Every structure is written in C-alpha cells, then in structure tokens.
Length: 261
Image 1 (cartoon, rainbow, N blue to C red):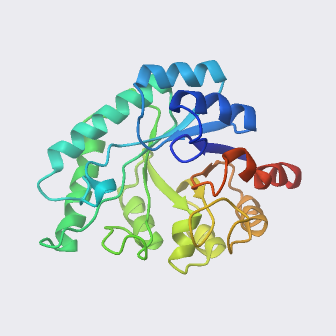
Image 2 (image 1 turned 120 degrees about the vertical axis):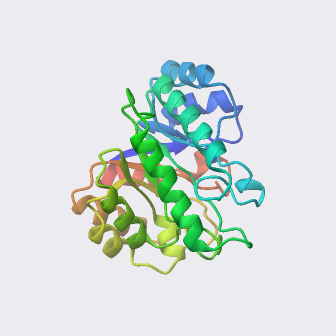
C-alpha cells in the first residue's frame, strides 16, 4: 500500500516546508498539497530534498474555505476557475504531481443546482477540449463531498460523479474517493468502491465523526483497507485528517497497515 500525507493537515507542528521531510521520515511514500503555503519552486525543492513524491495538488478554491461558493461549478466564476486550473496544471508539471483535484463548490442560494451542474460540466469540457492538459501527465479528479458538513455542495453522490466521469470517457478524469465523506453520508464504503472501481483514481481517509486519525473514531480501517486492496486497487491512500495530538503520536495506523499489507 502506498500512503501519502497531506502537508496542510498533518505535521502542523512544523513550518510548512519542513513537513515534506517529516512525512518521509515518518514512512509516507508521498505528500498531498491542498493549498500552497509556499511557492511551487520551494515545494518542489522540499519534495526533492526529502525524496518524496508529490501525489496531488488542489486547484485553488477561491472563497470556499471561508464559507463562500468556491469556483468549479459557480455561474459567473468560470474565468476565475479556468485561471486557477491553468495555475494548478503548471504547478503539477513543476512538481511532477500525479493528480489535480478540481475542488468542490457550493450551490449559491440564488442559483439552481441544475445550472451549477451545467457550469461544472462546461468547465470540465473546456479544460479537456482547450489543450490546457497538453504536456501534463496529471489526471483531473472530482470528489463527492458529504452532505452533513457541506449540505450545499454541488456533488455529494458517488454514483452521480461516477456517471459524469463515464459520460466524458476521458483518460484525464477520475474520482477522488474519500472514505470520510462516503461514511459521513451513510454509504457502505466497500460496496460503493466496488461499484465504481472503474473510475476511482485516488483514495483519501480520516475517521468519523471528527475527521481525525484512524483509530480515534468509529471506522474499522483494517477492514476498509483490506476490502479496498482486495478489490485490486493499487493506487494511493491519502491521509487527510486533523491530528488529535502531535502528528507522530497519531501514526499507529500506518505501522499497523504496513505490517498487515
């Protein structure tokens, strides 16, 4: 199993650029960057110095983290979103990242979900048809969120996102399957994973109910990891959780997964 660490969520005890080496020292094979806290060049250099892969980058999400609608499926923000995508593609090339997460968005109160969905689809088609991905080896990811933490999210249904990806039939697009979001929605992780295995490219995880480390909540990660690997999945598992204590004290799950893998 290949595990990556979010350098925005984990190792927050350290300055941002030191988290790359900390992740490598802790036994992670890669890192994920949800938002840049340093320049692309500095991040690329930190990853190279730590001899660790940059697995995933997020497209800038605009005002989403401060409670706004975000960018990816918001009417009137198409130009800002495509600019952010272009920047993410350039960053992914510089860091040799494997995946680019397009980022969630909310349905604004004054807009219909149908319109926001059409905007998202048009944005995706523009990316695929405009040549923006030319020369990039990265794959674009779409992630269903959970409707508890984010009831106005554009995408909360794994099956709907899977169908959207299948409709596009593009080698450049896949699903980011987050165990926390799927479980928070009340879904059966193993069943939904198996049903949509054909489009799933990347897995992320954290425990319920508070998005903390495995073993701190209600999910059985030994069972979940076993089910997903038994399905034939050979991709990355991204640790994207809020440590309930200093990060190194939350990694028992990583050692156990290494032993049982």
